[in-house]
Length: 173
Image (tube, one colour):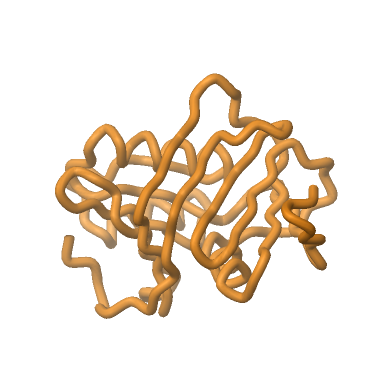
């Protein structure tokens, strides 16, 4: 995989992540679509939050052996950020500026993540990706302003993002 002359120095393969993905209380269809796509691509567990408290979601994740929770929040009907929790709120979050899930390709297989810059490395760390020795079928390309996932060379998810420090100790949305 080379893109515009870039040769990744290091790539991580994902067999199974310790990630658990949840949404805001009443997610819109777009937020559910994004959450489900990320869960399938990253081999994460996913559930709508519904009426459950944040501590209930964290406990459910721990019961399933998942130690990091990604909460996808929305504003005005669109997903706006992904905040991460593991024994407390993590310092950074991912702000979602735009996303597109392309249909028609199954999102199954082993995932290979390629971080293309320091912000990409940080996002890879936030998603709690573990090493594996599987041949890749899904490639995730992380860089400062975008995340892209391809399955067998076909783009299936593209996100315009911004990595930011969280401004809060908890989730208020």
